[in-house]
Image 1 (tube, rainbow, N blue to C red):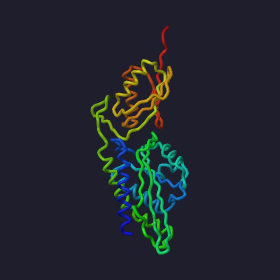
Image 2: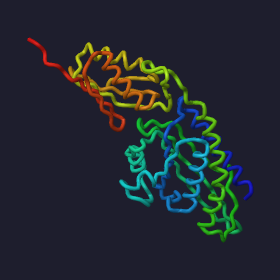
Image 3: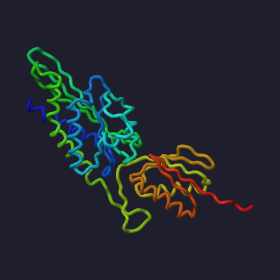
Image 4: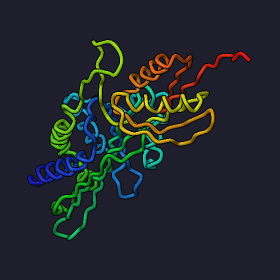
Amino acid sequence: MKALPLLFTALFAALLLSACQTTRDGMGGANILIMGEDGDADAVPRDARVFKRVLDALANELNAEGFDVYDETAITLDGFAQGRVRRTDGEIIDIARSIKRPPMDIAVIYTIYTHARSLGHTDRLHVRIAGRLLDVRAGRRLGNFEVELPGPANVAPNCASSCRLEIVGANARTLARDLGAVLAAKLEGRMAARRPARGRPSERSHVGLSTAYTLTFVGFDMAEITEIEDRVAAFDGYEHIRPISTSLKTNEYWYETSIPSAQLNRGLRLMLKDMDTSGRVSFGGSRFLVEKIGRRKRR
């Protein structure tokens, strides 16, 4: 049984490192929410002690590494039912997206599986952890990870279900320490400080996780929309823009950037000022609404 912690930790760290390699540069500074998924009948339920020990140890280690990790119970206490088990995948994602104060950027969603095969003289314990990294706002998968021991662990036949779960839970601290080190190596130094396109010299652009927003412009004519498209593509952190719907006076876009929402909000307001156009910028969730305040024309 002494080999179990080393094998379990090494495999999990290596596979999560591979998953994190699919993320873009500049993920640092993201708000992270660790969520347990137990909808599968074969999964360890969320109310099991081992489940909580793994989650708590992982959260503590990531927090010690300097990441902004939030407790799901604390930030959902007032608006959501607590203590639910066997939650569906849709329920978990809806909770992560519904949290607004503060908004979550990355959800680490994981499931613990255990299975024991009885041979009479011993039980063979199989342990597996499967999960994924999810961009909460855009719904983009940032990577998957799955860990399974290369061989089952031998457990005494009289070791009950709770006993087997404790074997997994005993590795929680070592697992979390190694996992935190992997994430630190991938995320540390990914935050870049760059001068914004406009603003005071003392201000810095905080480039982080690539995030998708919906930008809706109302009341602008086609010439103005063409200028707006050029301007938002010149913002710091710009990655991609794609039209969703267009009409004479309403134009909606899918906009991807690595700057935070506050800086994008400021950029849109400065854009209106530079265009000498009266307008209103409002923001909610992942949606920006930019409305032009028209003036009466003289005939």
